[in-house]
Image 1: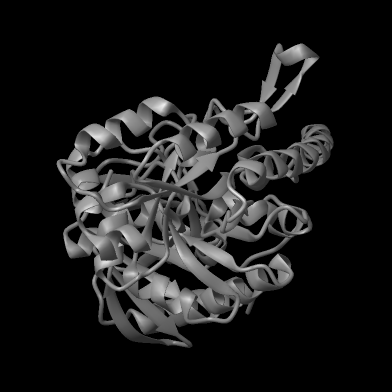
Image 2: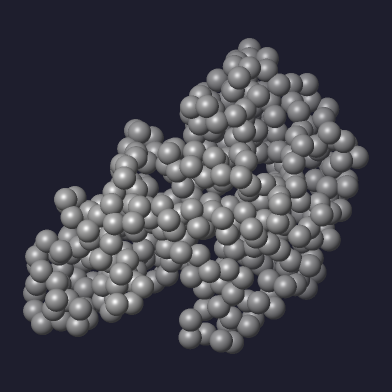
Length: 400
C-alpha cells in the first residue's frame, strides 16, 4: 500500500460515520508542518496568518507551540473579534476602510493594546481620525514596504501591487507623517515578498520556467534584503522604539529569517499545505487539510460523478486555482466540465472501484479559502476524528 493509499484508508475509517461533503485536518500533518516552520525560522518567532487558517481552535493550537507568537489578520473586524476572544497580539496585514471598527478600536483600551493596523498613505490616517468618533485611545500602526523587484529603471515590475512605499526615503516620510499625528504609535514594519514566498520554483514539467523563477527569486531576495535593511535604519531614526519588523511567508521562511533586519516571520499556509505549495525546492510539507465529496453517480466505465466541487481559489484564473482530486490516486477532471457548481464528473480507472456513497478526497488550492466552504473542520488523529471545531464561517463570520 502506498503512503497516499494508507492515508485514504485512515481518512475513510475516521469519517465512516460522517456524510460528505466533509472537511478534515490531519493533526499529525498539521503539527509536523508547524515544527517545520519553526525550524526554518531559525529562532525568530512565527506570526500565524489568520487568513490561511480561519479557525480559532487551530490558531490556538499553533500559538500554543514554542516558536509561534501573534496573529496576522486580514480585516479589521476580524482583528477586533480575535482580540475580544483573548488573542492579545493581532497585526492587521491590510489597510482598512471600516469606519465603525476604527471607532470601536479607538474607544476601547484593551482592543487598542492588542491590535496593530496597517497604513501606507496619510489618507488612511485621515480616515481613521474621521472615524474615531471621540475615541481617544492611541492607535498602533505598522507601515508596509512594497517588496516588488523593479528592473530596467522601473519599466519591469515583479511582485504584487501592494504598498506605494518602495524606497527607504518614502517609508521614512510616512513614518514622520505618523509621528507628527497625535493619537498614533508607530510600532512596526511589514514586507511580504509574495513573488518569493508565494510562487513555487519547481513547476512540474516546466524546467526552463522553474529555472527562470529561481533566478528571479535569488535576485529579488538579494535586492530586498539590502533595501529592507536600509528601510529599517531610516524608520528607526524616526521611531527608535520600533517593536517588530515582519517579513516572509511560507515559501520564504528560511531566506527571510536570515536577514538581520527582520525580527519575526509571517506564515500560515504552511500549516495546511494546500496544492499551491507543492512546487517548492526549499521545503516539503505534508497535506493537512482536505475535503471529501460523495460519489452520487456512475455514468459509465471509468467515470464517477461527485456532488459539488466548484471551489476555485482567488488569484489569476487557471487550472492551478482548482481543487485537485487526491484520493484515490489517478482521478482527473473531465476537461469539458471541470469542477462543477453542483456536480463534478471525474475520469480515470479508479472510478470503476468506487461505489455510490464512497468518498473522493480533494486538496484545495489556497489555504484558508477552504474554510469559506465548510463550517466545521473534523480533526483527525490516526484513524479517528477526535474533535469537530468551527471555522470562522461556522462561528457566523465571513469577513470578506
